[in-house]
Length: 301
Image 1 (cartoon, one colour):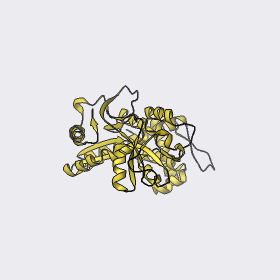
Image 2: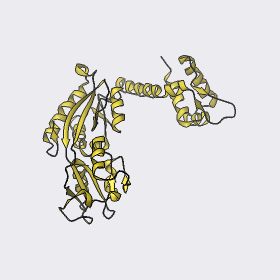
Image 3: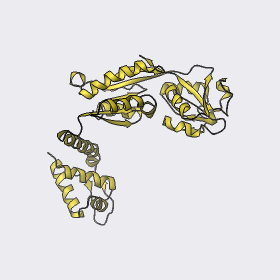
Image 4: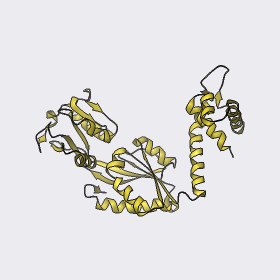
């Protein structure tokens, strides 16, 4: 069994890129840090760091770089084990989502769960889709939500719901209730989010991909910040547009003359779940289905 203190010291050195800085942050001497690293390397029977006299920074060996994610998972597991032993977390549940799902689709469900079940402890994480698949595959989260599919043999993908996409803009930029053609929308004034590969292909059919948008963002929550620019516009999931309109009376949803591909949301879980799925995960599945049945702006699949 590796010494947890030695592993934590190794990570602190990596994060600081300095033995001296790591020692200061750990409130120990530099020789103590060095001794801990040597003990860890002896336990692993490998060299993790290259250290030279008079060199302020450290250099990871290939084995050291490969050990970093293992060390991080080890420390996280030790923390969760300690919480379990002290009964600080009775029902832990970890979920990874895109920000548009976390904020505009599932936030009411998460809020209700914490109120109805005091023992439930939610760990909500926001990531890109490719990261979410890896988190589920590595058992770092119980569930993931994604708008794309990916080839991961150990991840189960269940189609949950679909929703319309909406054209949104400031009321000062376009006539109220207008139906616009793609030619009437200036791509240089777009707040562009690459929602999915299918959406990008559709988008490129209507607007020249070589033209740079006003703003390109990777988070839905950034869209409203720039819609006060004259003539600016964006396309986003209806759940997000709905929230934007509630928060800002100057915004409006407009019609686009050509249909926009709907988004399908997938629930990601590990194939090794099944009957061994924790109580919190089973509870979440049940409440999620009920929530989706009552969400009239979504189409349950």
